[in-house]
Length: 199
Image (cartoon, rainbow, N blue to C red; front, side):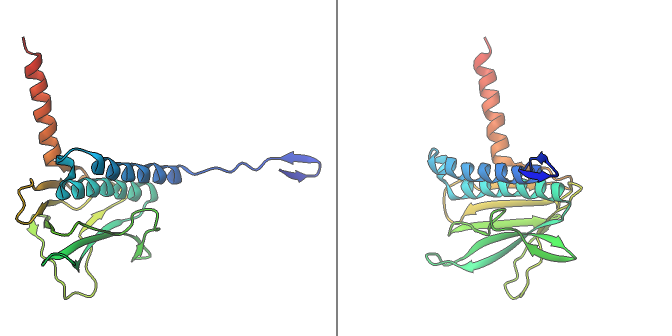
């Protein structure tokens, strides 16, 4: 409470819409990961878990770009894995400020490394992506603009030599993302439900 010449005024403090949205999306991200760890055997597959997390982070990045008017980008890199022969795929998100790629706050989209043994095949704008470990600074792979547009891409997340189904994700230029495995499962479930209701 502040006294201005005998008049009392109360300072109202609260959260902005962007802060609330970031918190809600972050909670959704965490709850999605928790739900996957507590789910059935299908949910426990590493490629499916990684696809779920990637879909959530891409959705967060797209909304962050629109709400903040900033270009968002996905950068990927590889690390040596401890228990497997192949490298471990990792990614981080950055925003563009003053024509430079700037790291996001730690509580927004933290850097993430996929489970060891999980492979990631990408096709960017119709061309197969090839990671170049000799580059000191990796270029951005996906861009999410404030207008809602994004880089067209197709990707497959799978485990080398495993019998677990590969997960396929598509992005179009209008910013629409499709998790093909989940779309097909939803269609199959709907058609089976329709058949069971048919007399």
